[in-house]
Length: 439
Image (cartoon, rainbow, N blue to C red; front, side, top):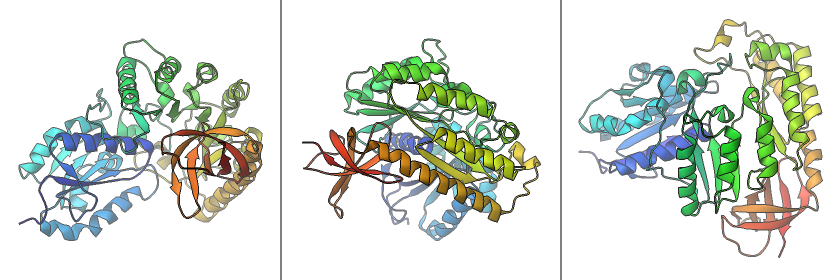
């Protein structure tokens, strides 16, 4: 007999904010079906892994984790693999890990209630693997939000860009947008529940196209920002090809829209951008940067960089470094190129040794660290609005984020997480600020 209640579940999430929010919706769906979430594998009857396959060895991490927990199979536990690795590997997961009972890609989450019924009936191989042509979004009224102050809303799922290195179009399907009415209704509901910060999510969030034709992405941003009770609106991730000047104009005109844009460039070389199938040039990217730098509000700009893409020469790499100097980003998320299944870049010769990729990544991160050390200094003496996230008792400090999404640690009297307080900046570091609450 199993040593645990049958309708308990443990869910572990790997990867991006989209996955984190998908897990919130999965948890809400499971709870609505009579399941109870527990905090350890040992307590659970159903163990789920929501997976990511963006980076190298992601699948191996999942199989290693499954192997770690194989011993629990004798206790009657069921295992499920969700998300991108599930969609990518499909039924092969059953072959490599026969004790897995359910494989479900992110485009099939709306079918979870029916799949759970099959699991409960004793079916050993339950699959939900829609092809990329699905038109369905995963909307649910049962979302279980993990943060009581900041909430996520998915406005578009999937991707149609087919960058040559990226697996997302194959694992999350084609682009499909929700109606702006449904997004605004969810945002109002969240405001009524006390949420003050909303983050709009999508693989390419500014590719949003309202099926009802009511709002552009910029108009939707502005409309969410005008909902009573909402103090901050963020969005991620943007694609330079679809990033319009109207987004900058919205940030300029609606104070609740945060003055931060994450705009992945990936490379500073036109030759590499073309090989990556990024659909824009360095010059077009810099034009979008110029729009933001001309705004009346200072907009913090962050980006992603991939080094060591197949065929990237030292000259290409130097162009990426010169782009960092020209733009002066507030943060860079750097990665070494790694081949992903099913992607067009697999046909390219990946000639650079890993040691050279690692060297280039280290150079990028060190140069960016110097830029950030200089950039963050400009906040010294400024009074910034900070959303309080928690307390570090060891250092006797509160921690929170500015509208530009910068972490600031500060001293001051007792405050509640989720509150907004003025903080004067007294010290600047490459990745954070420090300050004193203004009383």
